[in-house]
Amino acid sequence: MAENLPTLEEWRRLYEAAMRVKELAPWEWMVEMDLCGVQNPETDELGFVSVMGQLGEHYAVAVYLGPQGLYRFWAFEDAGPSASDEQFFQMPHLQASFEDRQVLRDKDREVIKALGLKFRGRQAWPLFRSYRPGFFPWFLEAAEARFLTIVLEQVLDMAPRFRDDQALLLDPGLDERYMVRVARREGGALSWEDRVVHVPPPEPPKIDLVMDVKLLERLKRVTRRVHRIEVDFSMFPTPVQEERGARPQFAYQLLTVESQSGVVLGDELLTADPSLERMWGQVPLHFVRQLARLDMLPEEVAVRSELLLRLLQPLGEELQFTVERSGRLHSLDAAKKFLLQRFT
Image (spheres, rainbow, N blue to C red):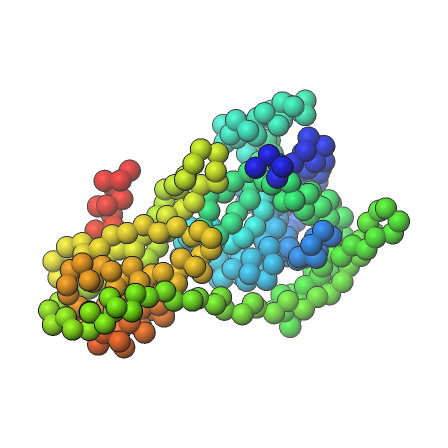
């Protein structure tokens, strides 16, 4: 909505901060895991700043939002080469990066033109994006632009000090403590100081399961059984947009395949509106509907993810089938590859 867009002056301050960070080039002595916290003076929310670009491939500053963003960042880092795109897009964060001109969208160019700015060369064009779990990376809202500006300004303060004193940023393994930049108001201005803040992992998200009880009771009377099916629930790589101008969402595919024959038994797309947790809570219901349409129950269900295991195990107890994790879902992977090729 128009009232959520940054003003031209807010854009100007953001671009000025980004250009100063580019000139400073903190990625020459910092790595992604050198994290510093910044408290948002408008909301008191903590953001955790990561500087990228040491390898010279992607110059950027990201701020991971809250304990959820922080610990999803660490999970992504711990996964290493096996980390998935889905894990990346489920980290709530804001990012300022420096890209080639062709990466920018029309809206980005319009702002740059309105500010009278000029950039030239590779990885010279500032690009600002908001990442929300379940949604496609999108343009900043006003509050996001203001916080990202503050983050970049604090990088200008913190990064040179870290270059001179590597002990400035605490080891995150040390009692889950982080150095955080915190502001206090003095008159009409903000005065910033360093504090050490304990940031424990967030509680696991609460997932309220949704179920059609009558349909579940009907399935309990089904006698037809198939030996083994493979089930996966994962992010579909192509975003969907409900209406023009709206923020695009990622679709999540609930795919069910019979193991022996490779026949697709069910294929549905869900979206994380209004949240991932709400969508996850609906997965058992959609799985029950797939089984009801087939008028059939499995003896075994193989899944890949821990999340899907937890979502389907209560159903297994109700409907007398086992649910197990498996890294090998050959029939499902073949079906997914075929469906993706057909879609694209």
